[in-house]
Image 1 (cartoon, one colour):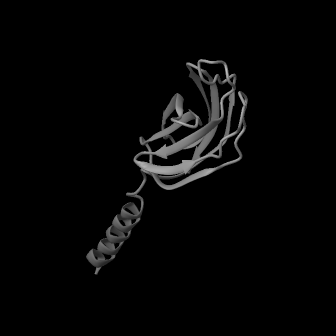
Image 2 (cartoon, one colour):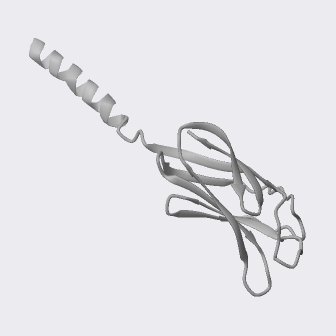
Length: 134
């Protein structure tokens, strides 16, 4: 009879451990996007910046663009419910143009659990954002 009691305890412990196997999954939220001193085209025009966001291979979409704004703030938030710790959060900053958009820079950060403020120094300005992974 004691063997069955011990077997139930072992089974319970195994089930509890199995429920924790997905420890690498994270719910990631990217928010608080803003930039300072962005430069537009070589002709000196103010940029019309927007941002594209990914977590791993999953695109979260992009922000709206801000016309003639070197210091934009975007209200958009991006949620990635199945991002993994160690995945790359990637944000690309672009200048919207009529013919083709100019790439102003890319920010990459490996996902870690917690809340972080990130600063990216671009060739054409500085970009800031926050992310949290739970």
